[in-house]
Length: 232
Ligand code: C5P
Image 1 (tube, rainbow, N blue to C red):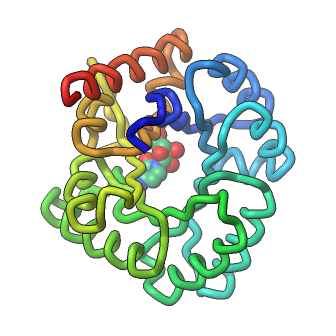
Image 2: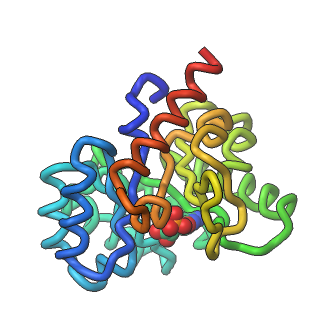
Image 3: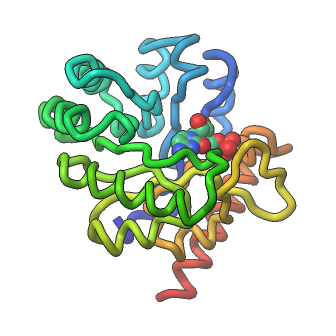
């Protein structure tokens, strides 16, 4: 993980309204980031056909945060596996039986990482409470056999300490410079994310809304490289 290049640890959240905008953004990010994240808005609008197109150039994180009864979630994981995505997630709030069913279903797709959302980075609960809940949910996800969690940068190192350095942390809520925090609460910049043990950084609006998305992505990668050099 730590040897992979920094651009392969950036996931751009394609929170745009449809295929045209998604493909145009993809074209601007061809050589700058390794992953594209397809979330609710885009998947509801465009479905599997768009995934097939995006897969040609990037690895795909299907961020639909499944949270339902175990049988339904297991079936959804099978469908996600059939799309050939490299990462999919469920919400850890669904409880141990749901996480175990998801983990069992994911075994048929060894190339796909299964990740659990702990506490949304937009949640307004006090930081200490978010840390406690994120840790509890990370342990649950680990026990159920998942590969890692989505958490804020502020929880990443604590989760690694408890669940092991191989347990993957995916961190949204990335902002740098004078960027607007928007609806995010537990934010951090790309340098701090790497310093705190984040494996993958999810970045949406700071790249999507930049005058040059490719330049913004390169800026983030440069800060990540700087963090690695400082710890080398
Ligand atoms: O635009 P921004 O950088 O805030 O986008 C963050 C992305 O990460 C969004 O697509 C959001 O749905 C997703 N996400 C998040 N917090 C989580 C899980 C996913 O912000 N805990």
